[in-house]
Length: 491
Picture 1: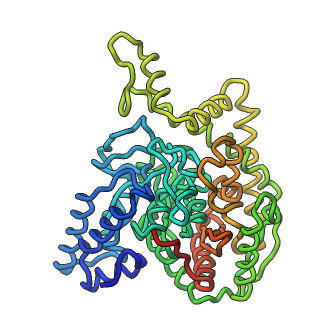
Picture 2 (picture 1 turned 135 degrees about the horizontal axis):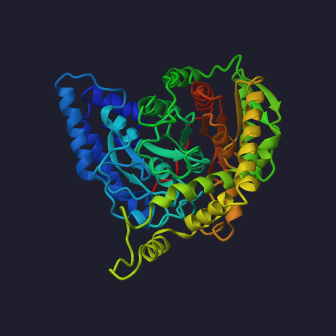
Picture 3 (picture 1 turned 135 degrees about the vertical axis):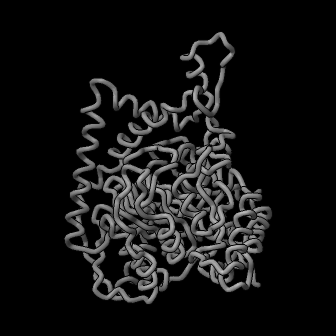
């Protein structure tokens, strides 16, 4: 058996299904890889060695008994530490939840287990998913396998880095303003945000409830589609879950891999034509557009005039919702408790706990959101931002009357050095300039590697109408078939 850690999830699943390798052997190989490189990458906050090997043994037992196995049975998967995992530490990258072990699995994790995948550990992230670089994790940053002095994106940098470093073939992330796609772009991996409501938020520690969307991370488009098909679908425990089946994203990815995009109309957003983007990123994007045209796609320029207001609207809506969601972390019911000496009042304990438990970025957003929701300011700030959200949705709907999907660079720049943007929050927020509109709209989007700039990966983003997730997979797979995948320097 060749190095199984370098194989795609599809290849690993075929090995296990065919009896060429056991799920235990596959899992152990990835655990060994984690042990070899994790001190340099720091992609994981917790590696569940015993649980992973137990899950792998169960897959092997089911195969030996002749039971039918799912298409990803025996494949290790890393899980962003924002999804509850029964009995396994789940911190959301925050000290306020240090050592918390949930009593239940999130729906996403339950579906991973039912499909026979092997959850191998919990990945690092910006605290409560608030950040674009994984520098805001309370447990230290994750390093980009392409260049250990640079960020792996955020908030789900741990999931993307684990895949790029061959510590796992698959991972789960969550996307509130680009937190799956942006790490995918800067690590040379594939990251997909499904339609909002197409994947369950039950057991996802909430940041911004109207935006948060769990989704797949992988090294190939087909692998991402397979993982999407496993975790997607209606969940009655999530009131925002869409009661419709997931489109056939796997068939769409395989169709796209044939390299034929005849009849597909691609829209280039005029407002994303280059402002604020690095020259190398724009060059890789232009080359990708030319490639897609050669595959038969028709390219149309589309104006979405309200996209320019997406960033400020997002940074009113998301903090407002986070200020409400994070009120539950009070030092009383679970998690960290500071100053409870029997003398201090409840308010004092709550204040001390939140002061020590939350990091600076989380505090910044809570303060901003609370202000935006306060009496006398709600209509001027949060209410106005929701109106802008409606206008952005209308832009998307109008665009999709003319084209099948929209395309853009995923991020304005490649992975930047640690510390280069933490002193200026606005410069950090610009990392999500091209990804945020889709979250405000609620549609699906995917980032696929499209080239290199200065030796670092560049991602192309494909945005599709709501519940048309299959369209983005087809286009992304077609581009991947033409340009190939990208491998970081050996660690």
